[in-house]
Amino acid sequence: MNRVKLKHGFGLEDFPKAKEVFIKKGDFLLYEGDEKANRAYVIVSGKLEVRLTSGTGHETLLYHLEPGELVGELAAFGIKARTATIAATMESKLLEVSYADLASNMQDCGFIEKVSHHFLTRYLRTHDVVCRLGQPNVSMKLCRYFKSLADQKDTQENTVVLRLPSHSEMGKLLSCQRETVTREMKKLIFSGVIVPLEQTGSFALNIEKNQLFLAGMLDAN
Image 1 (cartoon, rainbow, N blue to C red):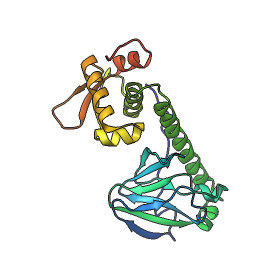
Image 2: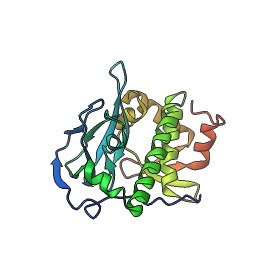
Image 3: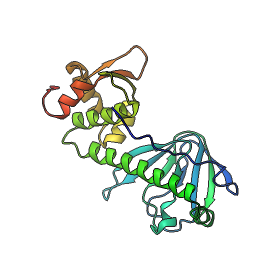
Image 4: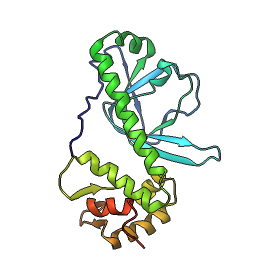
């Protein structure tokens, strides 16, 4: 599979005036709906997760953010309220960027190209989330999730090794209970879509069978 290689990654070289900040595992960086936004952040180390809360209070984990990624920048482009809640999944080091510095950098063509790649990457990731959550059942959601991970590997092989999060974590990603993920994973293993490996959390994905399942041509029951 041929994929366009996107340039991405921000750092201190982009924002030399930025202040370093540290947050602990479980701490919140941004809150969905907050309209007092005046800072963006670049992740230097660690990992953050992006969450959305429904009107009924149900929380869904969308995806993770890793070093080099920019977060909280949308308010600088006219979206006043924070669009999601951001929390740290491990101790993380960030660069706190003022919107004035962000606006100043937008005068540079090279930086604009970088930001364009950033937004395109975020769009593609959001598209994967919509496709994943839009599937009719949890088995389909899992297979769509597997496909998104396999696509990142950019391989021509029919089998790819995936390192999967815990069933509880996947439940958050798929907006369902951990027990449901466990049940549906067993079905997909039985059907040969995935095969557990000796290393905990690692599975071999059969890409062809995964595609057949998504097309409704393979039964996991």
